[in-house]
Image (cartoon, rainbow, N blue to C red; front, side, top):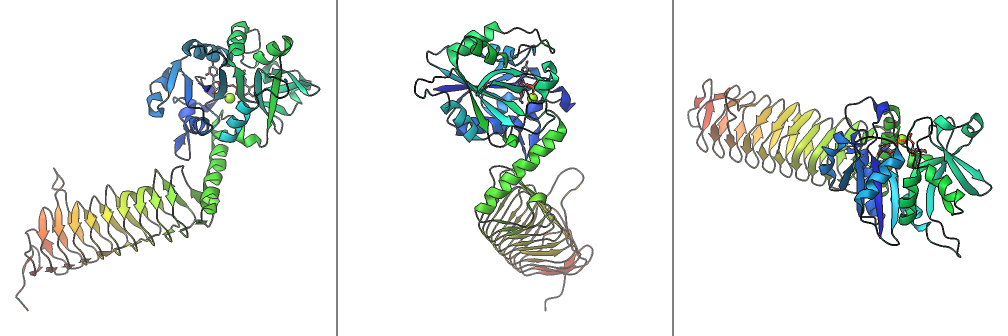
Length: 447
Ligand code: UD1
Ligand code: MG
């Protein structure tokens, strides 16, 4: 079984942040989350993350083992700290990766592990991912002699001639465990950064007559190590493009992937169309044949089929099927809207349950309310749910007609089939079938 060490204790100084570098997010997930996912998908489940103190406080979010490197003395030192934690295993293999390369793919990890396998007696004890990259670059340079890799030279130690090399060290390696344990004890920190470089293991093995196998990665973006916020933005763009491409291949129309902001772990049904300037976040689920956007945001939203959300925001709420929302509506805080309801312009709905065919078409605030099937909430209706101390409930029955500009002063209950006249201020419960109007609202004569 292959184990993995993920290096994530670096200071990340170039981010200029109080937060640990690998916790910075792209597309709604910390960089480290993507690296761990790719490793697990490649079948590597035993993972040890090398953390600094800030990261140690947050690593529990990731459900992974960790070890503290209290002083950041370099990547070689970090691996040594990790190996001291891992029980030695005869014939074991160790993959080393960095926590700051969120675009890495499971294929890269599969490839690097596979490449250690002996081919015709041509056994390597280390393999490393290399990549061609446009210059200038801060990546370590791969120095070859003929077809074989001889050493890795860090930028700060490189000669001008070495800086011209365009083959880089991606920072992803697989090692024979015993060989790695030996090599990390031999590292010296006599270099420009006074650090113990993991990359010096290459020269150590090669000088000992051992074989180090390079595996050339196709696209340098896949191994982009994020060091500052410019690279963070570039990585986000690439990850977002991948997420959009995946949903488009699965049958979703995304009109403009450049202005559609997705996250991993979303479900979007076939024939749904996403219009520009739209964000779909945090485990949202969208059914089939929906229209989302333009200019909309869904977060923790669950939508049925044939739902339209235009120029609107839906947060932590569920919507049934055949519902229209917007333009310019805001649904939030565990709102549940049932099938065939209609939420129109400039409507805010908070922590409320709307039954089937309810209409709230214009300029309303509905908070802490339950509204029965078929009820029409007239333009400008407001639930006065807050008495200055606590939030109070409004309960409206089925087939009720709430007149325009009604104020429903909670707690209040309106019975089935009741009616409130335009401008009513309803301070007392209205029995089923009754018609009220005025301020305060009083019963109207029976028709
Ligand atoms: C490193 C490689 C370089 C490679 C590049 C790819 C070394 C010496 N250099 O350079 O050849 O091209 O990655 O991105 O390895 N870390 C620790 N503890 C430490 C130091 C670093 O955990 O004491 C972690 C960092 O958090 C980071 C990773 O190791 O995740 C790489 O460190 P970083 O400082 O970014 O190295 P680079 O200069 O990018
Ligand atoms: Mg780096």
